[in-house]
Image (tube, rainbow, N blue to C red; front, side, top):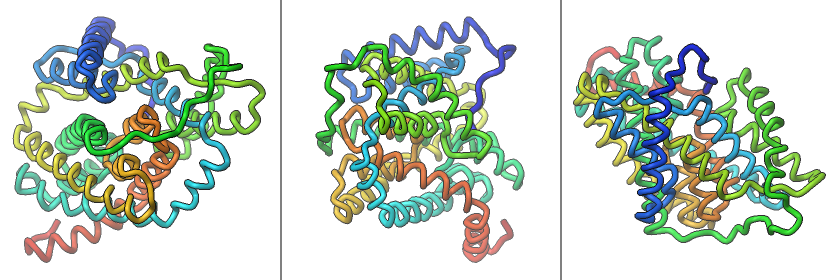
Length: 357
């Protein structure tokens, strides 16, 4: 569960340096016409600097507020027709979720020899759920929490870096139009933000996946249904949200962790690339079965954070609501079934290796 930083943990110099590098990375990526430039650029720039050894910190509450902005932008587009279409995808969502669980569990058998970690660490490191949650569960069950966190950080980094590029290269943009400018005040969306943050706080005690995105999205959807006044999130606000999210992703990479666990980092990198390839194949199957555009189907099954994949769909004018549904169900089901699946994994691992897990 994502919580706001404590005031006594803030480091002004590290925050300022991270913000400066993030902005510079975004400008360079935008100039190079990189897909999702304002998130990928800051992420790569801050990850490289942090791995080099510079002390960086994310913008305080930047990732959470950035997610809320994206959530509001998606929620304002959730018409009854869009929701109806998403509900009709329920069988496909269930099958896709089972497929993701099967693929990531199989990846654990590959990670174990590549990274030279124990079976428990390998399992929790490849489960496509939240990094902090899996690290905590791994620690409780005798796994290496640091190795799990490292592999998850690399997985999200690789997926966020590769998937938008592949989607642009092999997919096509959608046709979902933004709200017309007539009657929309440029700052009307700001009035929705306090209520959006309240919705996020309301979901946090329930352990709901990614409350900072989902809560504001649901609150904005209710607002859109009533529509006391017209509102739309402008492009500039989404750019700021992307920068904050990209910096938060990049500063996760710590030099000391990478140096202490070099085989884990390399193994995590190899597995992350294979998971992207598997998601590309799974996206093709999903698109053929449901009629979704390939780009949307790819984003729906990509094993990264909800926000990053939904934001990519939003920028490409795809059905971000459907992508959100697939991603939310995937994380919720994995969180709810992680221990039973771990039990099955232990049985298979025992039969393969002949040793207790």
